[in-house]
Length: 200
Image 1 (cartoon, helix red, strand yellow):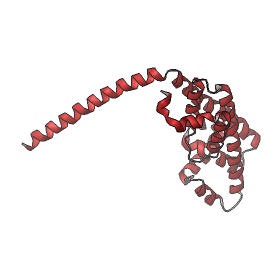
Image 2: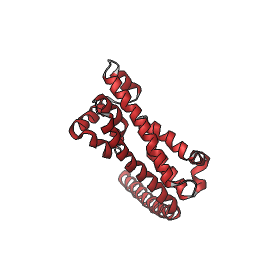
Image 3: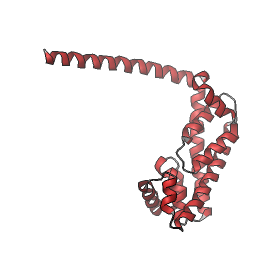
Image 4: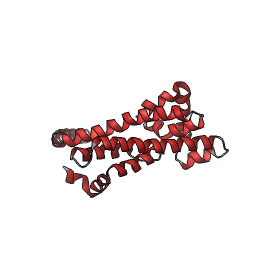
C-alpha cells in the first residue's frame, strides 16, 4: 500500500513535525492548499510508526495558529487601509467569501471559528475577516486553538485509521469499482442497443 503513494508522499512524511508545522502555517494563511489531505497523509505515516500522532497534532495546531494569527493581523491592517480589497484579491479571496465570512462572524462571533475550521470557504478567510472585524486577539486565539485541535486531530485520526485499515479499504474499493464498471458497461450496452433500434 505504501508504495502506491509514491516517492513524493514519502518525502513529505519524512519531514515529520517540522513538515506538518510548515504546511499548517500555509493553511492558516488561507492560501489555496490541501491542508486536510496533508494531515491525512501524516496520519497515515503515523500508522506506519514513522511519527507520533500526538506530536503531529501538536505541531499542526502550532503551525495553524501561527498562520491564523498572521492572517488576523493582515486582516486588521488591511481593514484600516484603503488597500483592503487589493489584499483580498492578492490572497485569492472572493468578495462572496469575504461577505459570507463577515456575515457569519457578525451572527456567531468568535465561536464560528471552531466549527468554521471544517468549512473550506469559511476557514480560508476567517482569520482575515476576524482581524478586519476588530476581534480581540485573546478571543480569536482561544477559538482558533480549539478549532485547530479538533480539525487537525480529526484529519490525523482519519489518516491513522486509514493507515491501519488500508488493505481492507482497498479491497472494498476494488470490489466496489468492479461492480461500478459492470453496471456502467451494462448501461452503455443498453443505451447503444436502444439507439440502434430507434434508427432501424
